[in-house]
Amino acid sequence: SGPVARFARQIASQGFIVAAPSIYHEFLGPEPLAYDGPGTDQGNDYKVKKKVSAYDEDASLTIDALLALPTCNGRIGATGMCLGGHLAYRAALDARLVAAVCYFATDIHSRTLGEGKDDDSLARAGDIRGELVMRQQGTVSDSRSRQIFGKLDNHVPPEGRDLIRKTLHEAGVTFNFYEAAWAQHAFIRDESSKGRYDPAISKICFEMLLEVFNRTLKLDLGDRSVGDHKVEDVC
Image 1 (cartoon, rainbow, N blue to C red):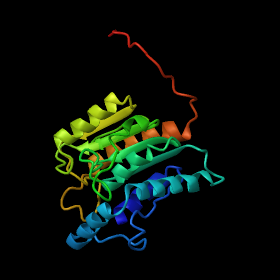
Image 2 (spheres, rainbow, N blue to C red; image 1 turned 120 degrees about the vertical axis):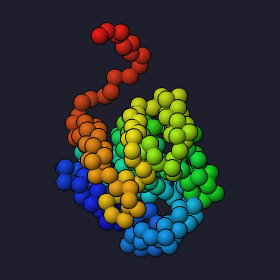
Image 3 (spheres, rainbow, N blue to C red; image 1 turned 180 degrees about the vertical axis):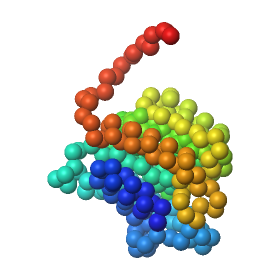
Image 4 (cartoon, rainbow, N blue to C red; image 1 turned 180 degrees about the horizontal axis):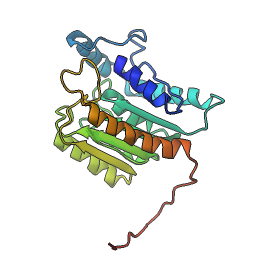
């Protein structure tokens, strides 16, 4: 779609190689679905017709393609919004992924992605090795993963966000989790947003993405120090 294409170009303009796979290639061509009632219904129908293993295969093949490029440094990240946020999270289950930034990722808390609406995304949280960033309008996890959600996001309610955050903590995932006070679902979508687009918050969240991607994908800081680390109680 237009917003996703512009988002990808924004990231590429910062010096990253970007691949944006078509997630519904089993059902239609690469052209985006219309962001209207029928298009939304069609996308939601495809979302639960496609097998979770097929989503994972798409991610794995995309990583393979990037790693095969002579200009790739071997460090791969993932990002996405809505369903794409969930798929970025699942991409982080691949040990080759260094970082993931997930914008208002849907269906993780409810385990309803894919055929049968019974995914194992939360159950496999312990498999994440990179940095995760989740924004609900703000959720993030460091595996490195970042989760981003909006406080007014009714697609992922407060109890769903709490479940995600609690599960990531208990699984020992390195993550960042952000919630923007006045943001709704799809706040980053800059067209046909149904009144939810928030350019100011979108800009801040893009800077969060750049921080984790620049640090983890561009810089080689060596292996992350692991193990017990006592934080001193100092002012």
